[in-house]
Image (tube, rainbow, N blue to C red; front, side, top):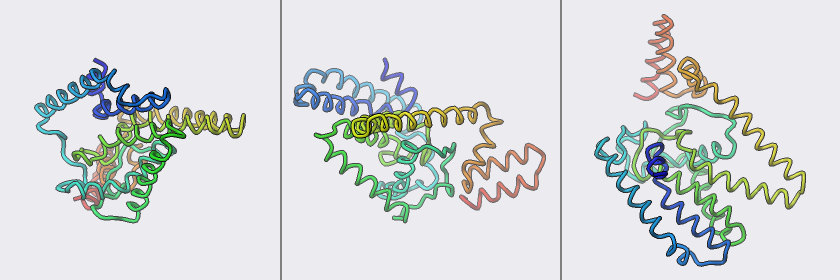
Length: 275
């Protein structure tokens, strides 16, 4: 029931069977027990989660007409797996920023606010480097800091669902798709907080508390943006400068206020930005 509700709420719930395996590995590591032994005790639950996920995927494909069920996001149309991987390489940096330093948020990540190109770009290289670094850290930390490995693997598995690598989706990045991956980020940050307390005592604990407080403040200041359309759409225009969608929304707002000349100019600019 819980998995069904999760799948109905957000597509990242398709990662739940993989998360079950990660938790078995982590718990077995804590109790010096081989993963195979733990899996044998939980395989029925795991198999049921896979069955529910596959059934939900089948029902979804019947309803929306395919695995993705949406027009590919701008920049992904007609791209192969390799092309989508190149488009998404710079997005790795956005994932890292949004999960660990979410000071700047946006309701839209469309071109050209977030450029999309099926080529290895200057932003794509550090994105791929960050991905390689995360994999390296996860592998090397699996014995000394299994919580870090669990958190990084959790983020990787859940982000894979919305990464446009398996199937192209309708968005390049959506903050609403980071709810489940953020659990993995919290696991990594919790380990860092414990390490800081052990290394620096109260100073480390105070620093961790400060980060939590900053996160709470950012949440409180962000919530009003989503109060209603009158707050949301003007904020979208301010947050995503250069995005064809923000130009389009700004044009619609200008038309709504009676400024047809500015509205037409903005919509034309949206078309030029992304025809």
